[in-house]
Length: 214
Ligand code: DX5
Ligand code: ZN
Image 1 (tube, rainbow, N blue to C red):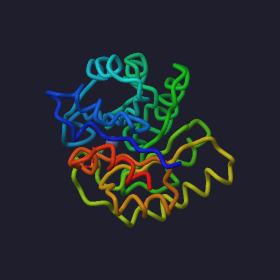
Image 2: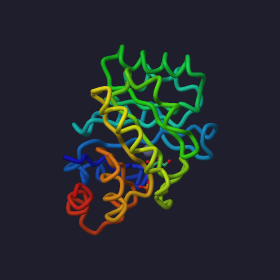
Image 3: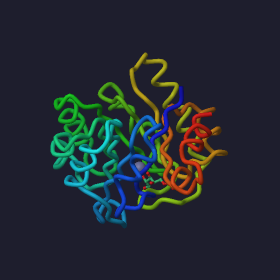
Image 4: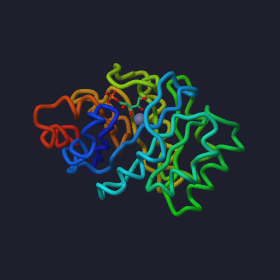
């Protein structure tokens, strides 16, 4: 079954606990961490992940849009993340591998993320260490952007490698997922859908989560 990971980037941060309760029928809670360096926006950090951990049992899917995430991977795990994904563009391949090892060493699920301009090949050397590969379907940094359909060949390629290798690795898409584009993503191999605006702008959030699952 397709999993839904609502992004709290579209929530009201002054009412975060309330807005987390509103998505409790989802599968994961997606937490977008931005540092103002790797992406041109700043969101939340370690203390916020810690606080979120105390108010929900949903697995926390922490998307690190930060420069050299190897520096902080351990602390995000200790703050209560269940899945931690790092961008392959944010450091050298060696350090990306190290970050994945740190996350796994903490008993958590590790993953890599690809920006729209980054080819599938960039994820390939890491697939054995990954429980998740995240394909961005918008430029990371902001919610509410348009789904990039031209990422679908990349998604299919990654699905193929995961299948061929018999890997226990989920394939996730993030950005512009709505009741229409969710179908495209799933048809092209996505198993986990991140959705910010499409979930939080819905009048009936549980119904929207169901609709996105398809
Ligand atoms: C963008 C973030 C996304 C964002 C998605 O950099 O990684 O998770 O919240 O928002 P929507 O679903 O509104 O495109
Ligand atoms: Zn994200």
